[in-house]
Length: 168
Image: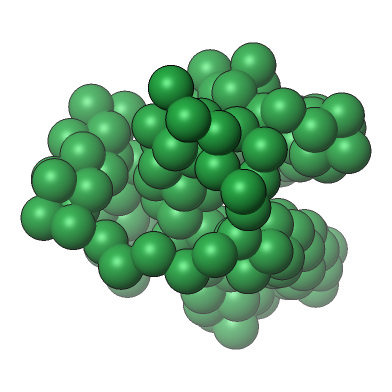
């Protein structure tokens, strides 16, 4: 298979990475908006600060992916490309419907925690496809940050459960 002059990897693998990265960028952009919206609705200052931090981290993930993609030659997405990305997103349930506006804080936190876990697994599955050590290191940094998000949200969920136990 002929090597691509733009990324140093085979054209098929480059297209696959584009799908993965583009899909990742869509999920990260969605997460930024989701966490910012939650921060605006939060009554508790600690909760608001956590959501703002998560939004900032997700924005950094989006920028990292965008920087990688803009370093490659722009290619128009084909119908097959779009179908592949759609199938990948559905398979991984990446764009599940967020909780309704009247959902409890526990429901919202569980949704966010599950979304973060999905992204950890999503990025872990594609680690071997990156040819550059720099990109692998950045990907692992994102994975570790997503894992830390799961831990933060888990602590918040425990705290919310404790509060609701006290209120009963």
